[in-house]
Length: 129
Image (cartoon, rainbow, N blue to C red; front, side, top):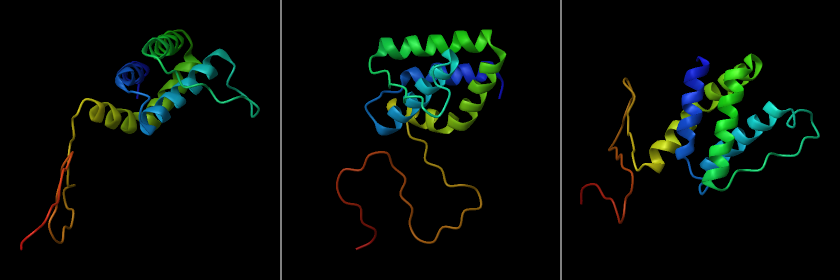
């Protein structure tokens, strides 16, 4: 993954809320990455980075990460590693926050019985009588 793709992933994270556990985990990891960029996140005694709660705090963090990645080759490498590690969780969380669900059964999957794929189910589901 190149640095511009990693930056695009970080920018898409701005759509992620901190209201869910998945969203908090993404922002915690981004905050830790931001601390690393400033040199405050290194060492075993470093305090955990605070999760940015407001949209303004999240935007400022993303701006800092983007600026740092474009100006510091070592940090760009860190960001690329972060993006590679977190790309699926960011994309899934962004999709869910937008109300989008992509149900997939992998090619070659062996299915025995019925399959239900859905986003929200309200009420019972039954097969047959």
